Image 1 (cartoon, helix red, strand yellow):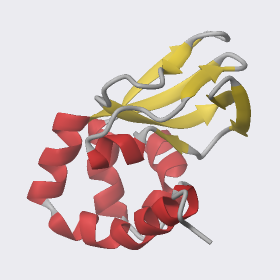
Image 2: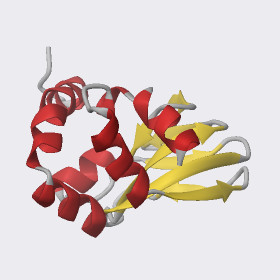
Image 3: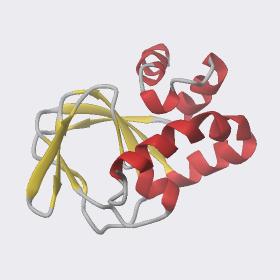
Image 4: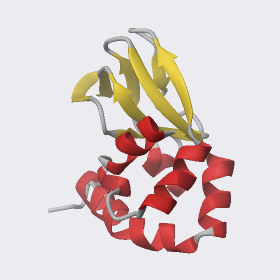
Length: 137
């Protein structure tokens, strides 16, 4: 659990959370090893979870173009999950990876039980939404 806490504490989306709040998220997390070439997120698919990269790298692809390479400490899939929208890009493991996965039901239950987590995360998520919005200047 301590290893999960160290990774979660470095994630910008969780940076404003306290130790106890991070512990609650860590309890929901499942660590998964992922082989290079594995599709983690498929564009257009339903969002059922988000994940935090602990080690390795993945490529984010949209409309056939690689738009980013993401690595340790980055979260993928959270916006589609929070907005209850289909995935907007493909994410494929570029290398072997270890990820922490949090499913929608568990995360929503946590936000219901401890609403201060949502309040603390809101500004960070809003900034991420503004950064990906096509209308953003």
